[in-house]
Structure formats: structure tokens, C-alpha cells
Image (cartoon, rainbow, N blue to C red):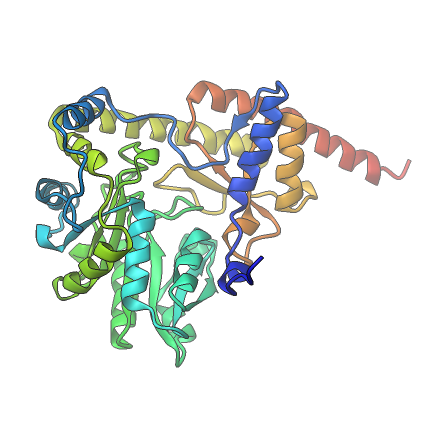
Length: 398
């Protein structure tokens, strides 16, 4: 066997996938598993999107597209950002990618040189670190606080920017916390990075899944950001592998050259199908589904409080709750392992998302139906009751 590249050893593991494997193994044995682990919507693409894809296939539109994507889809995304999030975007700055992962890969390869450091919040989505590493860079995870909704602050930039730091990668709303950055805090952070000649890569994958105030894109604060988004979450097209990157105009020729060589183009049929996502009747479906996610969040937050699960920062977007389980005498990994095996409820330990909160946190996803969430809470109540009973029995002096 040939010697593997060093980067294979430096790749950060993704424990959510391991939890999924364990849950699938238990399901194969006949157990009814409720998954609050993987971040995949239980909704799928609306019928109209499927019909458009079928028509495109029948019309023979499955060949290569331009590396930047079909013009009509780039225009539709630019219009979506303008009308939904208040950001004026030139369609020429939109590049269609093979999922948000493809967008992040192109962003990293276009900006990161070997030895460069990129700041990210702790906690944050683990795979993002691997894209920076694959481009030759390093990631510095900066511990955050619940007070600041687990988001980086301008003061963190001032304190942590070093001689090799070149930029930041942030997400709003965030995975695993579901929290958004307040507008003025984001403005201050961008300004702090700009003062140091750095760049901001902004993950807006969950921007459409909001439950309180209507968000605005970070592009309304600074036009020279690199923004990543996807059809996977709000548009419920996870396996279609379709996303986009919005980049400064001056960077587009270089990014298109990379895209042409590394991926040729995003899946053609998925691109044509995605045009229907922005039709008014389809957007109404997505908005109804967004409100369904809000209903789930609004059920789970008080239910978790009743269970004794602490949520230090209530989520206002995405479909995750980042809970503190240290009151139950188990670390996050042991808690998830026992929850899965004893209550048949899958969740992801906090160690997936960084070191600062790894030992005592768990991420719960509510990307599943309300009836299943209610059953999960019922099972968790029994499981946590057993934990308390065991703790009381082991500490009883009698």
C-alpha cells in the first residue's frame, strides 16, 4: 500500500456520521430509532421541482454547463438575495457549485496559502476545518461564550489575530448552535477583520431558516465578502448536491478557472430543477415548512427545560439545539451513547464541534416530524429519570 498523504491524518473526524452509522445498525436489528442527530431535513424537494428536473432530462439538458452554472439560475439566486435578504448582488458574482461543500472548497483554494491561519468560532461545523486544511492552511478555534450566542466578536479578532492569520470563517445561523449574529456585532467583526487586511468567508447555509426577525445577508454590510449557501437546507435538496458561492467580482475569473478544472460544473439536471425553487407557489411551500421548523423549536425548548436540559443560548435559526448535559453526571459522548442504546434516540456529542464545550454538550437536530419529537421527549424523560434515580441511589448514605 502506498504511503498516505499527511492530510489524511489531520482530517477532523465527523462524529455525526458515526452516530448515524450506529443508529442505522440498531435500526437494522429492528429497533425504532428516532434521529435527532443528522442535520438533514425530513422534507424533500416539492413536486414542482421534481417535474422540472424530469422535463429537463427529457429535453436532453443533462450535459455540461458553464463552470459558473446556467445563467438563469445565477440570476434567480441574485434576485432571491435582493428580494428576501436585502442584498444587491450582480449575477456575474454568483457561481453554482456542487453543494455548499463545493463552494467552500473553491473559497479555500482561492484564498488560503500553505501556512495561513483562519479563525473560526468554537463551537463550529467540523468539516469546515478540513477544507482549510486541504488548502494547506490551519484553523485556530476561538472559544466563544453563551453570552455572545457562541459567535465570534470583534474583540476576539483583536485578541487572536496573529502573524499568520489571514481571515475568518463564520456562520450565521450556526451549526451546531442555531444562533445568528446580531447585525451590529457582525458589522464590528467584519470591520475588525478589514482593519487587518483579512477576508471573511460567510456561511449562510441556514439563512432562510429563521424564526424571529427576518435576517439580512452579511452582504448588506460589506460587498466584498465570500458568501456560501446551499439548496440542501431551506430548499430540502440534500442529495442533489447543489449550492452557490457569491464572491467579489475581481475574484471570479480565478474561481471559475479552479471550478473548470476541479469539478467542471455542478450537476446539470439539479441546476435546471432548482430554477423552480424560486417560483412563487414553490416559495410558499418552503415558507410553510419553515414555520413547521419553528413550531418544532417552540415545542422543544420548553420541553427540554422541563427535562432539565439546559440550553445556554436559544436558537433563532437552522434546526439545532445546543444543550448542556453536565448536570446528569455524564460527558457528552457518554450521554449520546447511552441515549442511543437505552432510549433509541440519536444525538451528536459536542466533541464534534470543537474543544471548548466538548465534554458537556450535545447537539439535537429537530429536522424530523413533531410527532416523532414528542416521542423522543417521552423516551428522554424515562432515560433521564433513570439517570437521576441511579445518581440518587449511589449517593444515598443509607
